Length: 321
Image 1 (cartoon, one colour):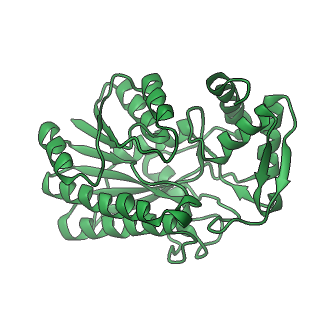
Image 2: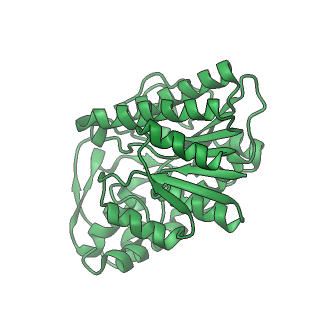
């Protein structure tokens, strides 16, 4: 059995590749190494976490390239993590989200359908809950009022996958990630942005005047959830399911910053700002469905996980972070 991991040079992707290889599984990766953030971080991440994975530089928009890749390996399962990420970036670069998250997803769905892929596990996001749901977010709540184009594309992915499950019997599982963090994380997200700034003595922007709560989820817990879901294909009719993968313990933003300060050994210079367009005030995952389906049980608190992020930032970026 050979597994394709898309977005394999990304934060979650590289860690999933590493975990699958540690289990002795055959893994092939693809990534387009785009410049949304420094591609060198992606190359270094791959070298550190999954250097033994056959990782192809390929864009999801390249249909001929995808066909050739499927012809070469005949994938049994696919973990689809490639996407244009970021809520705020979608406000200024909408076409990047349409090209990657919608067109690219259709290209992948078509290949999974025609090549008899046994199971497609794909990344969704807690952002899909938008203004429709109230914490704790459960998979049964509505997701029809997104706050950003990014969230809208992820909600669309779930509808698209459901349609392919209904029409063609493609087994598909959507995974709604809740603010994933850890060493080698994305540099545009708060855990790394804040850690680097505090280490370097730079001010940090604290939106909504700090009155925000996030369900921060450590990377090891997320990887366990991805592989657990992958190994338990849906048996429903149609064969499509969605799971929350979060820590189910929201943290006050001010507490989050305090843990970073403690790990860095210095205080943050906080600049309070109003709410950013597209952001959500609070996220909180109800993970009971994932627990019942494959034993998902996140166990890492920010007090355990964040110091490692700060230490990694100091090591990778240096004293000035």
